[in-house]
Length: 253
Ligand SMILES: [Zn+2]
Image (cartoon, rainbow, N blue to C red; front, side, top):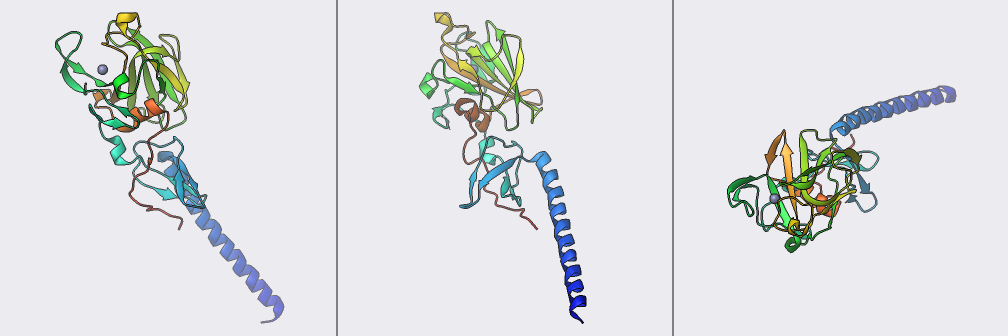
């Protein structure tokens, strides 16, 4: 083989390698694009391998993958989807003792269905505590409503990324929009303040004192509120670590 032929052969090989690499890249990009439809990307602090999360996790995820750009496709850890009950710690707060389900109502004295959970000053959340928009996507619809007696001033939160799931924060002092109106806010933005004591003139509805009443709906039904949205509404961010410990099971081919 003379030098010219050798160079041509090398050039051809190079081109083939490039084509294969490009094909692999395209395959990976296609896979990533598909995964991204369902999964939300996390940033990784690349050098030390620690996961830095931003509040962008889809609640239904269960797999983790590192993309070529050092991003991670993540999952809300299953234990962050656990239901909360009285006495539970949720980050820096402690849940009140009125659980989801049937109770003797403290104001009415009759057996009533309590469609959420309560947390007040004794749990670390006094009147006028800031409440933060929940969600793992780009934006969440917030609707401010008034029901008196009842929930008082309250907000419905509907994260755009999970149309089957919504939340209610009741007995508020302030809500982001005028009563009867809606708007879109980013997860983590303040949408309201914990309400005061109706006995002292607060517009907080039927309530024995300042507290947040928090409810969750799935497919139109009240469910026992789960941990991470409650954490987020009180802290503004998602609990850490938000990722499952399931392992890194999809890496670049
Ligand atoms: Zn309640």
